Image (cartoon, rainbow, N blue to C red; front, side, top):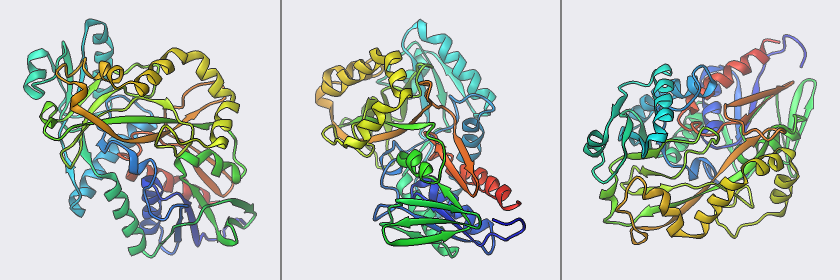
Length: 405
């Protein structure tokens, strides 16, 4: 694009919660710029947004100063205000991070220090008695309580964002699978079969397909997406009294996954999980779903092979939990000993778009790249839904930089 030429149109690939938040921000904050969201599905929020736990994270775990920490704290305040204004569900049910033995106490203290540094309010350190006051059926020798951790319905939030895009004059083009992107000096062409849309700028927020869509625009192969399926159980009706809010283990710092935990839902149900097993399809929400291309791409990525060699024991443990309810619940019963196999039923699974660098490192922080007139959100794992409005601010600020020349 020639210097000084104005930007009249921006395309956004991906109608998940992040893509819709970005489009909403563009439509509302960049006067005169037409925004169009494109997604291959027939409705919004089908994949990660539609398969997450609904937890609004307060910012306990993230490295102080990281994009995750900054945007999570900014995002939770924005999301709470938005849900209040729009009449969307938002319940501050609180979270307990529970240490079950003395070996976990140092890590629990590090989480408390990080959370304090990130500005998480009203934190409390609890002993066994304080823990049981909040969760009478839970056990542990110590816990960290975050009362402002909340739950919502992120699908409803995403739909509200889409309504805002349209109300501000934008478009949401569904059933538009992007199969080609061509960057020219003065425009970006996006093709879906015989359909062609042309924009001045393009933002990629494609979640599970983010590396592939970015590659269509000429971006690097790194980081690649390796999909991990998170399998859940739910407490049977009548057994929800076992958990009042959110009960989490002290996470292993070597992994981005938080381990099996208990999550209250806005409808009153309680989820148990997830584990984390390699998905044989990027959109494979059941164990029998296999897509050859997705398996081939994961196995061919050098980073995945290095990751597998490094962490095969953890992977084997997660697979064992996938195959056996009794084995799965061994981990859950550390926190709620009364739980039995009769108390749970299988629940819908989700798939996490885990970005992996070539050296086998799991990408932890949000990562956004730029190639000429295309911005690509290459990694936006949890707490991306919590942070969606703040991520949109950040991305649109980056977009303004490209518009300046």
